Image (tube, rainbow, N blue to C red):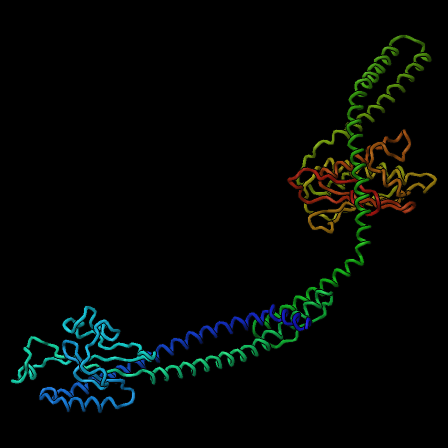
Length: 560
């Protein structure tokens, strides 16, 4: 019993059942209203026909008795109304005079009686009592009232008027001013009409019930096959999709809204299936990507720390340079002044030469310290670039001329080439400073030592970058190369692999700052024993924005 009730409750909650209930309710209401309207129209039409027939019958009796009344033949009048009263449906006929006394009647008990003007049959025509105050002739002279047995009776009132041929007769006792001489009252039973109406009502009710059942069955079958089944299939497939099975499809050839819904659902499940496959593929590589991103973040963090350290060192360098510059200048100045005084002092040449050599060494060392201070200021100031449209070819040639002698002294073959003829926006002096710094380092890396014999080749090449809006400058040497640890520090200030007499490690730091101000990048690739390649990428046109916050990177192939 419980499964049946549960199944019934599920059915009543379906859209098909609600649609069927709506259609059944609407058609029932419409058919009820239609039945009521048909019954009302039929009853009105039938009553109208009955009233017209009754009026014709009453007028016929009046005309048939008129001649006998003029001749005062009461037996003929009585015979006529008795004959008519024998027809089926005639309840009674009576004639009463203007005082309301019945002078002719088919029912013996009504003869010589007086009509009650307050009776149901009279008040519709004589609301004020008496025959002297009837309604106007245009009013309806029929009325329907109930007999003592409850049967409906149609009563027709036909006035017997004082016509000219009557009022002008010699035997007439009424003056012409009396318009109504009496009334012909015909009563007809409506039982047959009521039975016909009841039968029609029953037939229409039965037909309406049959129509409701037929339309309900047809609409129910249509809703079951056209709505319930497709929706049920759709729900079943959706439950499969909800459970994770995205391969379910709805097979339909219908072109209506349900068919369109099924096709749209199939497209949706296909998209979901494709998205799931993509997510599965992505999930397989997600861990690898997370590791890669984590490594990138760690590298960026290290480089940010490096940039902050370089900024701090720059501030320190600026402060130290300003503090040392003045005393160093004083040492150089006073050393040269003492050298002049000793030369003029008249001391023996051997003694004077000893003093002069010491003072000259002091001045040279102070000058070397001054150069260090100069480099410190250059690194700390990072002065702005004077951008102009310049061709790189002449800049490369000038660098080659400046480096030819230095390269020849170290047995290094210098080769330059430039395949970019269009001018680019840059500061030529600063770019030349970068190239010279990199070329000097490359020559010194091939200048001898235990790691590699003296000599080698140095190639400076300018060509279009992979990005058409940029150009690439490559400086490649066949020197000793660098390991990963060295590459991680080459752009830091004061880091150098040279002896103390050859530098303090500011050249590459200054070069890095210049390239950064040009919105460029530096790639460094190096393998110990196989040389080093610096690749500088510069934009053809400078951005209107400020210099980018590039981060120095030292691993092979990375940008700085």
